Amino acid sequence: MEIKIKKGKRGAPYKFEASLKRKVILEWYSGTLTASELNRKYNLGNSTLARWERWYKQDQEQLLPSTAMKPMDKEPELTVTDPSVPQRNEGLEEELRLAKLKIICLETMIDVAEQTLQIEIRKKPGTKSSRE
Image (cartoon, rainbow, N blue to C red; front, side, top):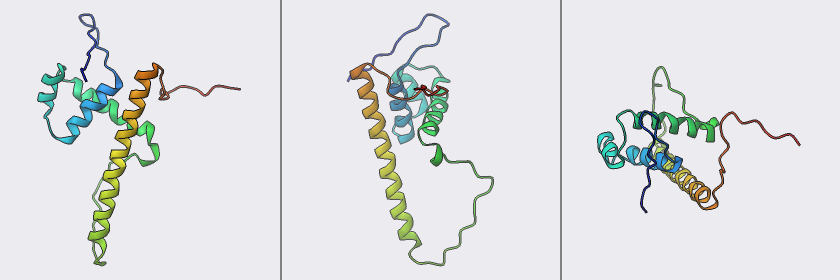
């Protein structure tokens, strides 16, 4: 699959497709490439990756507002009294990994459908529902 990057006029921001942004951010999160390597690979500016990361987090919070993680002031103290806790944690970590993979797959399916059908499927933030 060849990646097409749209070029803008000098001084105007470049326009990138959401699927490319997601792909680059997920590639960065996977740890296979560093930020500078991704910047070179996709011909991005120095601050583009950080801006895309903020965009991606907002996109994820919009998709899953009830599961958005809030930063904690202080880490809770853990005391383990039940011997099954490590096994349960491993099971929960595996469920989380599978859930993240499912989200990635669903986002990819939506991206492909948007490109194929040339329609926007995702709801834009701030849009109002239509009145019938």
